[in-house]
Length: 190
Image (cartoon, rainbow, N blue to C red):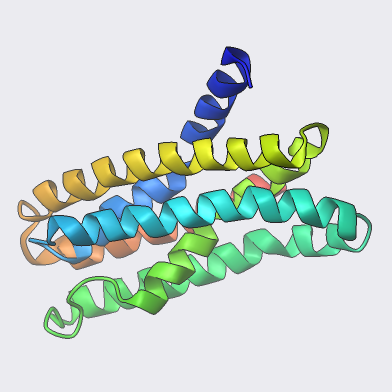
């Protein structure tokens, strides 16, 4: 492992973490006054999936190269559907004043966001075919560490600014998640 390997994976991790960063901001918007430990939990979930997906892609490349092409083509639609559903519920709760029902993102929604925002990391695993299994694991851990730091920053920033949006925080968070889903869907066509 050399400096070039570390730098390239730090940069890759930064690029891959941008959707998770936006989602962590949205989650903090959904829960004004969110405890800091929940922000750390949110960042941990996103980091876990950002590490899991490249390794999954790396291993699946060897297992099912041809049949996996179909699955790869539907992944953006799955990510969009997950984010649109979670974002839509946040908007619905925010517009209808259901803050009591929507005390932030729940475990199921957080897992859905973790999967949806890390889908692009799956394809990063395909590019790791030139790495040994240990180097692939090291790259995935670097990506996870970068994601964790970026998402903690996002959750803290969202937490700070959510108090300024008043009762609209839930709606703003939902719009951010839907926008991430649309971005993922559009990137599939470009």
